Image 1 (cartoon, rainbow, N blue to C red):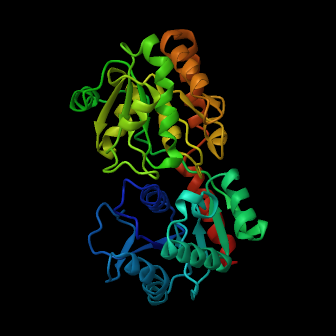
Image 2: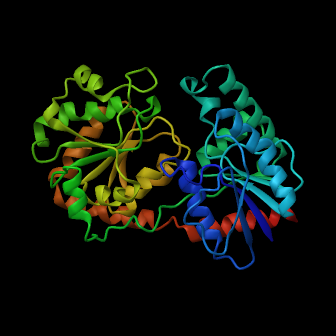
Length: 374
């Protein structure tokens, strides 16, 4: 079976869609029954598995160019390739295709959360991809929570929407790496800390992350500060509230918090491994890959009990309502001072993360391909 995959996000490794596309193609490349072609809007593609073909399509990388690629360039390339099936690994299937369509819709945030609806052009794009989803033979999504949202807000038939959970990359492991100490020095990490990593837009709820250290700080911050990883927002806006303003509003001392700045994607496993806990009070996630990556490194999660996060974290963390900063602070303090509790949560983290694997994800995806063409 010849599968053509939309590779628009192939080189965007800091995005969830980019990571998913990479890991999916790598997992499918070892399936002998598949011939995989990656169709991209750029000739600059690196690390493509040897068994996969690359089919570049010339075009612009503007917003208009992206829509042209999704709706015209990609389906035209698939026809030329003679693909048996096309897979779009993010929410942007073409309205028309000469082959059956499988699309992965990780979430439908613009349909659910008002701050993400954007202006007129963004709303028109959302309307376009919402309509085109009805032409897909099979829709894959990452969690039961997302499946419920898709059925409610897109009105697709239940038998066409399948839950196929994601998995962490194999490099996320509790086993120390010789480079861990070098990475720790590069980012100025202390011996023990609580880690936040996962973006700064408003649904990530950084206000609660920082508010926890109003209580955690006086108790353990000298020996276990909060480390916030990632490039900070350039401007303080309602959509991307700046951490420094939030700290001032919450009365969180600067000594309690450290900022790493941009983190190389290859360095994130070391950051997870060194942390005594990972905090993630997001208000909405289609899946929540950062918490699963933390669990795969043996790091317990403290976060919110909303959307897909209970499915991902299971009993390997403490999940509370997203505004319960005081409750999350209590869990962080216990993880910092109670060695037996931390050891038990570390054990649960590894058990829970083992329930997810790219082998299972690829098997379920191939099954969807087979059903779509039959």
